[in-house]
Amino acid sequence: MAGNTEPLSPRAKLAVTAGKAAAAVSRAAGRGSGSVIGGRVALKLDPDLLGRLAQHLDVILVSATNGKTTTTRLIAEALGAAGPVVSNALGANMPAGITSALAGGSDAKYGVIEVDEKYLAGVARDTTPKVIALLNLSRDQLDRAAETRMLAEKWREGLSGSKAVIVANADDPLIVWAASSSPNVVWVAAGQAWKDDAWSCPSCGGVMQRPGDDWFCGECGFRRPAPSWALNGDYVLDPHGSAWPIHLQLPGRANKANATSSAAVAAVFGVPPQVALERMYQVQAVAGRYDVVTFLGRELRLLLAKNPAGWLETFSLIDPPPTPVILSVNARGADGTDTSWLWDVDYTQLYGHPIFVLGDRKLDLAVRLEVAGLDFRVCETLDEAVQMSPPGRIEVIANYTAFQDLRRRVGN
Image (cartoon, rainbow, N blue to C red; front, side, top):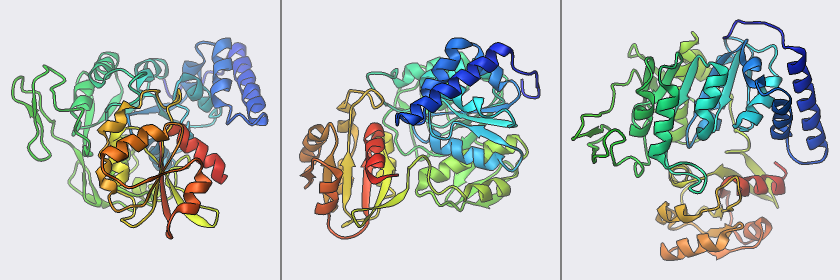
C-alpha cells in the first residue's frame, strides 16, 4: 500500500539496475526508448517487481479503448499540484513498460499508470491502486483483443470487491456494467459519440433503449446511473453543482471529456477542480499526438486514430474543407492485423477534403474510400503526399505504427 517505504530487496535492486542497463543499450542501438525490453529483463529477474515498485505510491490506473494515454497525462499534470508523479507517459502500457516507468519513480508520491485493457485486472492486483479510471470500451484490434462484452466481463470479475475508487463513464453501458461490481464508484457523464458497440444490454443481451443522452434496457432494468461529475459544453460540473471552465490546448470534445474524468480523479486526492484544470492547460501534445510540425516547408498536424470510435472523434476536430488530409494505415502486430474495422468508419465525413492515402494497407483503405464515393490519391511516401497536397495546413491521421513511422519521418 502507499505509504510503505520498505526499501527494495537486493534482488529487486539488481532487477531494476539490469532493466535500466538493457533499456540504455536499446536506446543506444536506436531501437526506441527501451522501456519494454528493460521491463522484461527486470521482471525476469524479479517477477514480483511491479508490486514492489508500487508499494510506496498512491497508484492511479487508467484504461480504455481510446483516450487513455491523454487522460493519463492530464491526471499526472493535475496531481503534480499535490506531489511528485511518476507515469508511463509514452504509452508503454503492458506490465513490462509499466515496470520500467515505476523503476524511475523512487521519490514519487503518485503513480499514474496507463494500462492496456487486456492487462487491467492483473496490474490492479499487483499494484493495489487507490483509483481506477475507466473511460470507454469499443471494438479494437479484432485479432488480439476480446469482443467488447467479454472484455467488460473480465473487468467486472477482476475488479469485483476492489477497494479502489472507480471513476467511470456513466454514458458507456459497457463501462457501467464493468464498474458495477465495485463498491465505490464515482460516475462521470463524459459522453459517448460512438454507440455502435453498445446497442445490446451487457447484463441480459436485450436491446438497449437510447433516448437522447440516457440509456436503459427495457428487459432487465439495467440503466444509466446518475453521474456526480459531468461535462457540460466547456465546463466541468462537480458534485456540488459548481461549473469550472475547461481551457485546453488539446483539441476536440473528447479531450474535454478526458479532462472531466481527470478532474474527478484529482479530486479524490484533494486537488480542487480549478487547480486541476489550470494545470491541464500546460499539456500541448501527448506522445506526438496533436503536434504541429513543419515538413518540406508545410505545416502538418499529427493525429492518432486506431479504431472506428477514434476515427469518428478525430474527424470531428480536423479543419474544414478544403483542408488536405493524409490518411495512413498499417496492420502490424501493434495495430492488429485485421483491417475489417475500416468498413465501420464513416469516411463520408471527409467529403470536400483532398485526400491522400499511405501505409502498408493503403490499398485496403483505398477500396473503402472508393466504396464511400470519395476522391483520393494513393501515394507511396509521406514526401509524395505532402508535395501533391494543395496549400494550407495538412491534417495527418494514422493508426498506431503508421503514426510512429510518420513521426520518425518528420523528426518528431
